[in-house]
Image 1: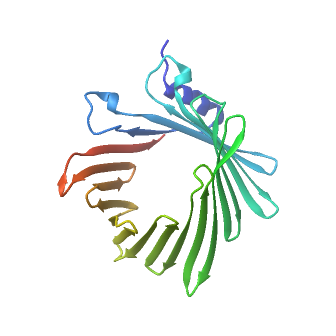
Image 2: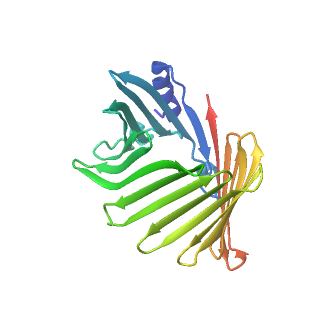
Image 3: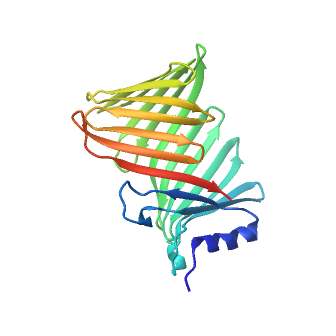
Length: 261
């Protein structure tokens, strides 16, 4: 007998008094039938175990299937607590119903210093990336410094950001390359952010506020693409248009809507 993720989540939701949300996405801009739609149900709940705050949830395919094991896209859990003045959070995510491997994120925050670790567990615990962020104020501006280390590749870089009034500057530097982004709030509704790389690459982003937290963001990368993201309430539409010189050579479209029950 066929059943859907909707029925599965409904059972879980009734047991926990937590309602799911539905997200529908067009997987690409060209499809012959409803196979291009990717309806996804997400459900989460919270709890407490002593001094530890617990969150957990599941993201599942909402299309009809006779195989219950194929419905979950991922299952995740998060635990948060305070340890010696540090706010510590650990989050694990499993793909589908394969609980033999997990992607793990660990965050520790102490006032203006935070540490983030990306790791994986496949029986052994392996750290993939480490970064630390230090924030401080100077000359009426907010400054953050974030050194990062990729354990797998051995690459290191540092991100420095400077924010004052309606202007922000972000510099990313490594031994091989450097990029700088200057973001300027031109007026109440418009923000412009050009990015220049040491290898000569250049892009510019323009964000237009449409009111009520809605926006239209356009990013032009010469000789590469034009990307447009339109957020309108629960709808999000993304358009990627590759460039061949000054000509648009095609278009990839993604449309997504979140529905809260």
